[in-house]
Image (cartoon, rainbow, N blue to C red; front, side):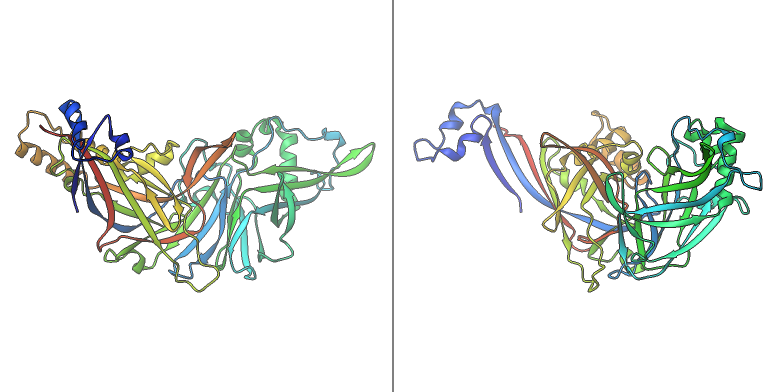
Length: 481
């Protein structure tokens, strides 16, 4: 499967415009310096892949998930809930104390308290009745700003039994509780969760006791309201995507000595923390190392891991340059008969396994050295050139093994073998479902951010323990004359 061709550096681009006859076939070679004559060759290798379970991913998304569903094709179960803090405006103020209407219990008079949980999309059975429970978080256990939270977060560590309110409701996607509403310029459905009036009284009264706690969100979170945990205990059938939630307190104050009802609203936004917690039950058949295919599944469920045959790729090409390494990964069509079959991820990130956590924690973008992005196009994910990762892995090993130019081949082999035994993932990459965020200016599309996909996606990929994925590599070197 290997071929060799000779090309001229200066005239390679012109070769397709002239036909050669007996007298002119060698004219290019006769006038070019021999050092400018290069040789190119191509070979095909096979990359072994396997499905790996994912305990958690960085939860830095602005959209939360709520619910539990079973994938109709694989029977994998995904359950999600979220913790949400509420943002307030800087230096929030309320009416003067003497203009407020006070109840007989000596606290501000509150008409109603409720949350609107806005829903941008859903998956599953729209008629299924789901139970929703909200639990207030403890202000002594606030999720700290600047911490990297993952989807295996335990909500229990932010809750104290007997502290804060709890409320429950039931819903289905087509309940009357879900109705069209316009918020932030976008049409959403929303679910209303009623809270006790005593909760609203506590929030308002805290302002009149300690107005300094309402100067900014961080003080508010630590002294007034740390947020809520949202869950659907015991319910399976629907998963909601929740971009934000609002907390609304309706209260009374006197306007020209007439009691008037007004309200204050707080929202869970990207300025404060929204953290989705995800748990998955993966059937054993999906992670079988003998499968001749692999899976990628989100959120926080299954990635595909690949092992590049670096030594085979470099064998006989120690002094050659790798110009191109093309990897195409085809997908299998879903076999699910249900209309609720999961879609394939829109993008897959190929990243060196040793860098997979840093990539997201440091908000990196694909650099075509140890990370690459491919969209789903015509049923395939195509990485047109991953030669950078081959060079990266070779250098990673040789630097780590402290290979010296004065070493014999036997010494180099011994050093590499020892280092590889201590760094088992050095030549591995991972395929991760991601969301790619772009900006468009004057019709120019620019990649701005990559995040873990928190959407419900699943796809079966070619590869696995069988033949593996085809990696087509092209080399070049100066021709020895």
